[in-house]
Image 1 (cartoon, rainbow, N blue to C red):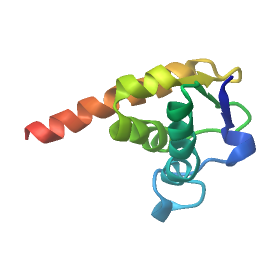
Image 2 (cartoon, rainbow, N blue to C red):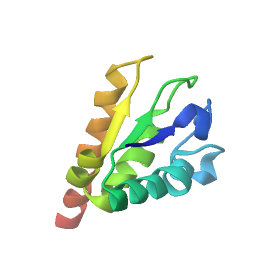
Image 3 (tube, rainbow, N blue to C red):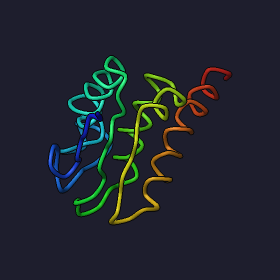
Image 4 (tube, one colour):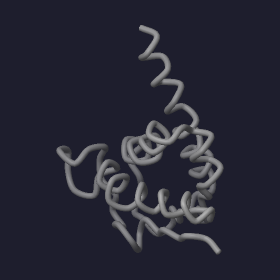
Length: 115
């Protein structure tokens, strides 16, 4: 059994900017209010977390990076990719784009640590 989260159904059909300060339905809001709690639940129950990206008007790259890259900065990219399953029939290439944000999140963080 999987834990399912639909951005359009459970959050907004019009996802917004990166941070809460920048506007409504931000990536930061999605991360803190829905994605991270669902991820913790999936982690504890040893179930996959299936996130449906379909049904929205569009995504700002800043929203996706803040939400999914943000999750990877908290839990490490490898751990996120083990639990998270992304689906997107509307725009299948979006799945790879989000996975890249997840993979790149720890690389950017490691670069900052070195400096």
